[in-house]
Amino acid sequence: MLPKVGSQVYIQSYKHDGSLHRTWARGLVIEADETKYVAVTNKTWVIESDGRKWFTREPAICFFYTDRWYNVISMMRKTGVYYYCNLASPSLYDGEAIKNIDYDLDVKVYPNGGYDILDQDEFEDHAKHMGYDEDVIDVVERSMEKLLKVIDANEAPFNATEIDKYFQIYLSMIRNK
Image 1 (cartoon, one colour):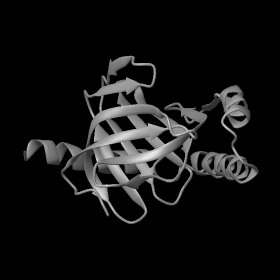
Image 2 (cartoon, helix red, strand yellow; image 1 turned 90 degrees about the vertical axis):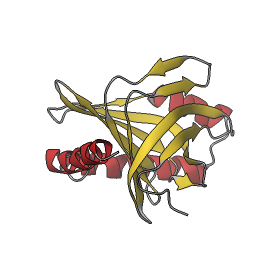
Image 3 (cartoon, one colour; image 1 turned 120 degrees about the horizontal axis):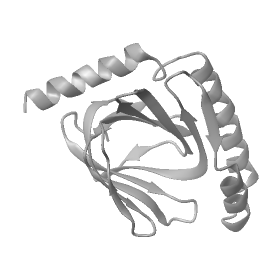
């Protein structure tokens, strides 16, 4: 099942133990095929597992892959495009929401191409306390290596041409509503 282009969907991220990690109230689907769902969040509520709520300030083009153990959120800011990459299970759409399991490790990519790897301690802690098996740990670590190669090579979605293409699709869709 694919989300319908032009529809609004929930986005839900879980933890390995099944608990809800984070929810976006809505994302506008701008592309969907067998390998990825692309949705834009803009001025939408995000609810954290501890009940905190915050409102997104800028458009973010979100890439949810059905065959990769990460997803990418590209935030359109005045100072350039920032990317936040979550190591997570492949995403699925169940008719209600785009869903995945967050595996703690994150990569923040800056407009100049530099990046920081975040939450390694959280990954190690959750691996013990939530019982990640060796296969999960291995696939997450290998996926991190693949992700860093994609970032270093400026492959999609980590290039201006790709982001501009999707941003223009988004602008066209909201203009024509």
